[in-house]
Structure formats: C-alpha cells, structure tokens
Length: 146
Length: 146
DNA sequence: TATGTAAATGATAAATTATTTCACTTAGAA
DNA sequence: TTCTAAGTGAAATAATTTATCATTTACATA
Image (cartoon, rainbow over all chains, first blue to last red; front, top):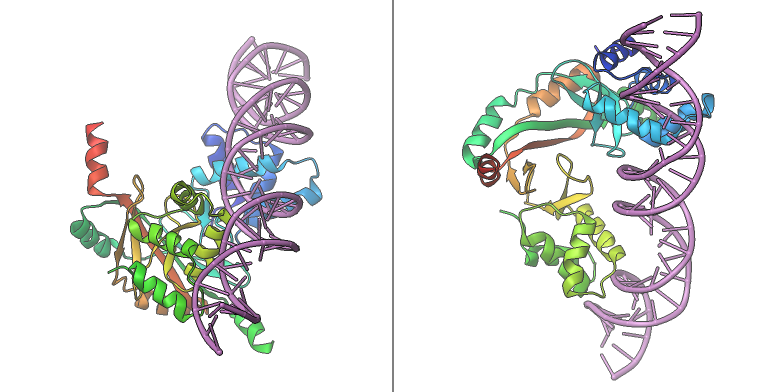
C-alpha cells in the first residue's frame, strides 16, 4: 500500500518540519492520484484552489518529501522531475506511457546480479533504478478503438 | 564493446543524415570517454577547439544520436539529459556516482518478472530501465584516503 | 490563550536549460 | 562544378530551477 496523507504528514513532523497549509495541499495532490506529477503540474492544479501559493514552495516541498523518501522520482516516461507518492519498503514502478498511471511492485531480486557485477567490476554498488514502461489496460483499449 | 566513432558515423549516414564536422566532433567527444555527458558539458569541451560551434547543434546532434540508439540516456546520478555512447544489443549501465564513469552489462533476466507483472496488472510492457549506481574502484580509494 | 522565535513563504530576480525561427552555409548527389 | 535539401549559428524566446530577502506563520513555551 501507498502512504496516506496522514502518514506523510506524521513523518514530516517527526522530522521537525512544520506543517503549513501549503505543504498539506501539495501532499494531498500527490497522494490523490496514482499518476506522477511534475512541479509545474502540481502548481497549476493547486493554484486553482489556492491562488496565493508560490511555485517555489512546490519545489521546496517536493524536495523535502523526496529526501524523506515519502515520494519517489520517476524517469521512464515524462519529465525527470516527476514524482509519485511512495510505498513503504523497497519497491519499483510500472508506468503507463500514455496516462502516467504508476503501479508499484516488489521482488526485483537483483541481489545475485548485483553481487556478480560488483565482483566483476570492483564497484561498490549502492543502489539501483528499475522501472518498467508500458500501456495500462485502459490505454490499450483506447489505442485499439482509435 | 561500445560503438566506435566510425560505426556511429556509418550508421548516421545510412539513415540519410549528412556528416558535418560539427556532428563528427560531438560524436568524437561522446566516444572518447566512458563517462556520461550533458549537452552543456559537451558544448564547453568542444567549444575550446571549435569556437564556432553552436550549443543548438549539440542539442540537435544528441537528439538524433539518441533516436538512432547510438547513444544512451542515463538517469541515476547526474543530469537527466546525460548521454553515453551505446553498445549494440540490449544492455544496461553501472554508473559511478562520483566520477560519472559508466560500465555496460548485459543479462538482466527480467523476462520472468516482466511476465508475471504483465499478468497481474494487465499492462502491456514495452521496456524497462535498469541502472546500478555505486562507486568505482578508483573513487573508493580516493574516498578512503580523504 | 498569548507570546517569542525559528522556520517557512512569496515576490522578485537571476541563472540555467531547452526550443523556435530564419537567413545563410554546406555536404554530397548528379 | 553546380544544385539543393539538409544543416548551422545567431538571436529571441520559453521553460525550468535556484537564490535572496523582507514578511508571515507554526508551534513550543509560558
């Protein structure tokens, strides 16, 4: 399961960050869909209801949330400053290239590969980035009917 | 093995693109190291020897090379418009987060995972992005001695 | 509940990064 | 050598991201 607004807020405060309405609104937006969001997209969405919010605040909030691993940065498909709400634990993403919907999955089992890579190259491997890209069921149907 | 300057040039021409000295210089720069390069980094490097070259040309050339899969875009570590010379066939990258050195590897064996994911989610999966990030041997030593 | 203070915000400016336009140049085929 | 479509650089513009700073606010403490 993905983190809820409440959980994100709690963790944010546990780390000593203040809870402003601006931060709450950004969190709510990211949590509200399974899609990924760029800073500008969030700004435009939020700005409709809260015209006083500044774009800079969106950037700053996303930066904090990303640092605390409460949101995840995506790369395959769309902008590279594109975030989705996180799920606890080690996981990866399956992304729809058409609608931007993101599905989490676990169990990548790359430890063996990582070990042999490390042995062969001498690298100290600290992490990996794994994303699948494709078309979700809905978008497959839409593509067919077009 | 990675593509050579000659191979890249040949494929470029096979696709009907003209070979300008600007393109050759960009290709040469990307091929010359195992690192990844941003458009600006290439521009600054190239501009020393060829002050007449325009930054736009770098962007355009990189775009073409990427479309022809002659160079690969990287995401983990550094800018997201960051490219390294390609190796033929399906492969992935192991990136040093300190010096930017890139090592290719094959054999990710994600087909099984991809199939089960596709079955569970109904996605039609078209591809994946896999990168390992870590420290190469040289940078490990440097970090220790500091 | 009122108050003090560090943290956070928005406005502004500025720096970076990326794209568009267009007149001029050039690679390469004939 | 000539011709022409493709490519280039300069400049303007757009988009994205970061820095600065006076003002505002969350929230701990009294």
